[in-house]
Length: 345
Image 1 (cartoon, rainbow, N blue to C red):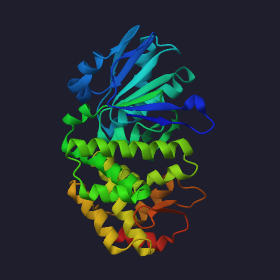
Image 2: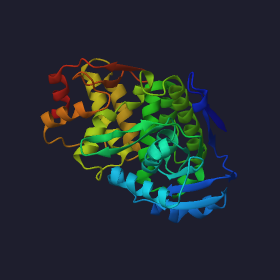
Image 3: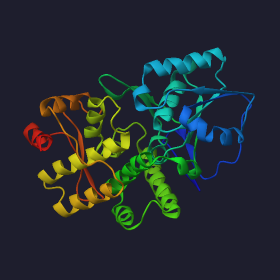
Image 4: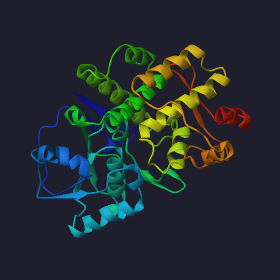
């Protein structure tokens, strides 16, 4: 299956997402594959059998969100310079969302921009992180505060790579799938409630549906000026949780799961979501062993950290909330006391 991303009025940025269609990649240029030890140990040999290039290099970076920083970016840039890559060279991001985000950012700044291809190996990166051109790194102030919008030339999603995923990584990806269903497709959410993603046939169907949703949204709004911001449902809370725990306690999708629960509590207080809907989301998250609670030590500090979120502006916090399952609202005028009451619960 092939899904097109057509960036409105930007045909040079349009590209294709291939699902289970990676046959052979041939390049008449230098190529560097950016990966980590875990992925390379499991899958690099099978990828190398499908890639040929004028010169081919492997750049291995540490595994984990805590390494998604400017130090690692500089390490990658040093390797590219040592191998004398030029403007015709291509990078291949071979790993999860961390590898993809950093590879994309490097390609956007190396020699003022070269080309890259995404080959995501986690469920989260296949359905979300690898699609849409968001790139960047974290710093001590928050998540992805340094980065750029820079689209890949192509994305290849191969479900064979998911067979070696640890259960936590799989569930983290499911959280992002649930997010997309809740905000854009009520029928898809009902389908997720009634079908197990542990069955390969169902998983492939769900991946295709998520990619179609993401592709449609990105095609309409590349730089998150409007509808694309809806994909951050649950993330406003999640990014603070990740920052407070130094990106070590939770996988990104796990933090998003907690963030969705907190967002849903806020939506209930605003009358946008009822108890039955809250419970349905809560139970689906628990079915995949996702965390659904977080001990907030200092509600005031948690609240103040919201203002470091990229979506906040003019000292207003923008929240993406469900307006019942399958619909959403973007609000930036919620009273502080109401938000604090959710945090203190």
